[in-house]
Length: 112
Length: 115
Image (tube, rainbow over all chains, first blue to last red; front, side, top):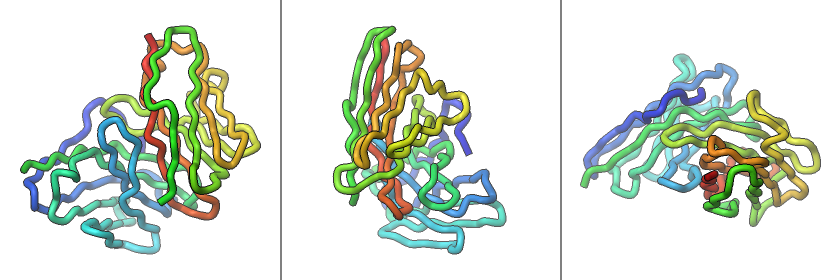
């Protein structure tokens, strides 16, 4: 759903640990989900996507889990690195190719 | 991966003037481009969907006469903020999709400051 509020939740992790970022989406009809990474002053960068006919998808060091029953999406980052520090947004859409609705975002801070 | 170029990256303008932001898909054809606005520490809010050769579709609450969108070709969409006011100061981001592809690619964003 859309973000309300002025403060992003922050997840602070130690370098080398695994990170889990969660997102609750709003539209039951959404069938396409994407995680984006946004560094300060830059546009969002695609990380990984998943369609509603899957519940898990793995990429390089990242895994996305989808639970349609509770409309929940999570992004797992393995062996988190300082370069992973950024704001992470989930986005949902209906019929991939249409507009995306972004979640509120989570700031990931990686401590060396 | 596909590249979307947005220009300018930063612009400062005086109140009452107009500013044009360009969004180009560099290595693919984008029949649809999307314009977002992002306030500090907030998420991206979709402003409008721009289809090549037709009028843009604006989200509720977005003034179409203030935010003029033109998508004249398959590789270029422009957003013009007309009669800009300080409250229009924001980060504007475009995204584009290749025909038939699900993944959307984003521009670098434009930081607009109206003084």
